[in-house]
Image 1 (cartoon, helix red, strand yellow):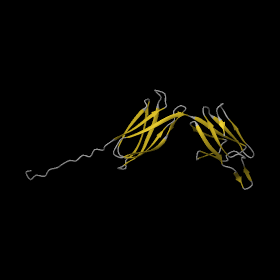
Image 2 (cartoon, rainbow, N blue to C red):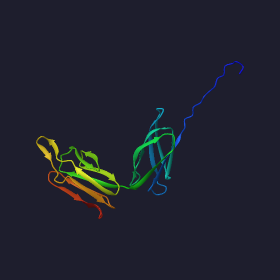
Image 3 (cartoon, rainbow, N blue to C red):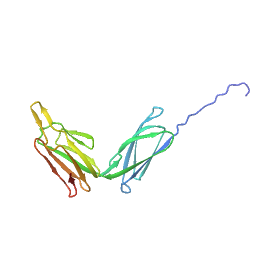
Image 4 (tube, helix red, strand yellow):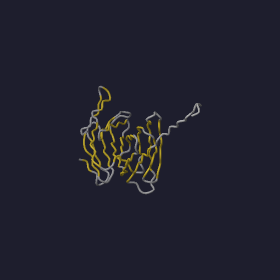
Length: 196
């Protein structure tokens, strides 16, 4: 050095890591999409949606905590369809399986209009103020309970005489019909649907 001041520039480069999401279960060429959102360790908010017709998507993101959401695709549900991804100094691989989607429909008959009623299925509390509750699930056993009685006011209530059960389906979608006040009618749509 000759006694003169020296300026040294330091550049920081953010390191990106691969978040690889691999799907199985869809036909070749089927378009599917994933949204990744969350905060990097330095506080930057990320919200990116990617679509693909291949079975693999690759996001490049810095260290951080992210949520992912996978949309259903034409009669198929993603398992898992959402969750958390933590990036901390290395790449991440997340595997998604698409399974055939079946509709479970609960129909309420006998309730006045705009009265809320509730069904709990597999621990999820679902409400409606119309005559229908519809959810999407894959094949399997599903325990349900109908919240009863339903109080309209201090002088009026509606009661279902059967409020719990298990639905099992191997192939077909099925429908459960709820009649308030007195009876719960169950109707299977598809020969393999069974109410236990």
